[in-house]
Image: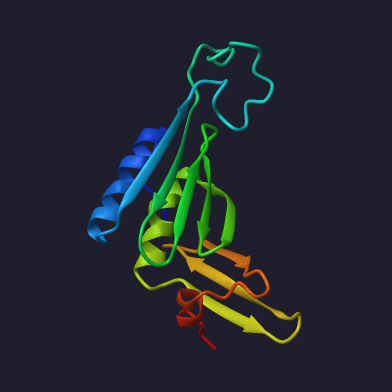
Length: 151
């Protein structure tokens, strides 16, 4: 199943603000606009703000208040890095960010542990067959993550 198209960073920020409003969460957004300001544009020349095609890259860092602690870094290339209570999910497509956040705040995200290989993983299912799974760092089990443990 496809996700709604979010063609720009600003469209993704608007979608995140709507999810935050529905869940009564505070939102803080930091925007970086221009090749000299975005994190992945290290090859930008001195005083260069536009990409070679003339466009202005837009990156945003979004912090959502409440529990769990969630940050979303949206990149101009169309992907995002989402951190949930210290567990980092890299390379999440921008179009999947709203569904990811709905799963986290809707109670669908879960932590599952294993004896071998030892560890605990945070799993975030999205609609369709899309699922994101990342290792919970050792000793980083927060109260929210502990409540999300499923056998």
